[in-house]
Every structure is written in C-alpha cells, then in structure tokens.
Length: 168
Image (cartoon, rainbow, N blue to C red):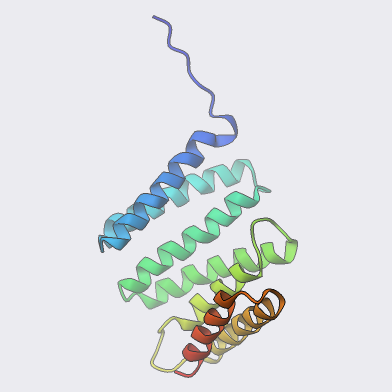
C-alpha cells in the first residue's frame, strides 16, 4: 500500500483548519462557553500567525489576524477583562487602519469604523475617555459618509449606535 502525502499548497489546509476553528469558536461563544471559544480563537490565531509569517503580503491573512484580535478581545470584554479587551481591540484597530490606508483587500472603511466603534464603546469606566470619544466620532464620520454615498441603512444604524455610545 502506497500512502501519498499531500502538499499543503499555500497553507490551504491550515487556512481551512483556522477557518473551521473560528466558526467553532463563534458557536461556542453563542452557547456561552467562553473558555472553549477562546481556545478555538487562540488556536486559529496561532495558525494564522504562522501562515502570515510565510506570506506577509496576504490581505486575507491580515484580515484574519485583525478579526482574531477582535474576537479574542470580545471574549475578554464578556469576561469583564476590559483592559485586556482594550489591548486586543487596539491591535485589531492598528492592523485595520494600516491596511485601509494601504488599500489592502478586503479591508475597507466600514471595517475601520467597526474597529473604532469596538474600542470606543468598550466600558473601561463609567464615562468614556477622550480617546474613546474620538474613536466613536471617527466611526460616526465614516459611517455617515458611507450612508451618504450608498444610502445603505445599515450605515445609518451603525452611526446611531455610535452616537448613543458617545452620549454615555
């Protein structure tokens, strides 16, 4: 019997594994199994880091890293670890902002506004800090421009969420 090893061309199998882990993490999060979700997200992030080291210009992998930081940050936020969540959201925002400025696909203005909103709406304290207010204002500005350009009501709703968060 001859067993052939398949080459993992461009990390295809690792990408699929990371994607599957992320989906499993989302399901675990919805079931409120936060530790299990965190384990899935963390493993997916480690795989993505390895793949990104081999393909540093891959926009999809950069996007996956951005999403991983956001997902792990969200778990930290749900566990009331706000400082940890803040650090993770900052990492996500940094990756997103850099890649929007570079025009890297699939990053876009909406993704940037979402990252800004996450950081801006994080309940670090009862009242938002000046930096959080600036994040929310920037997110509002982006969503307002997107709504005016496209007429898509989703951008208007996101704008309203950010405006409400800014009032706290």
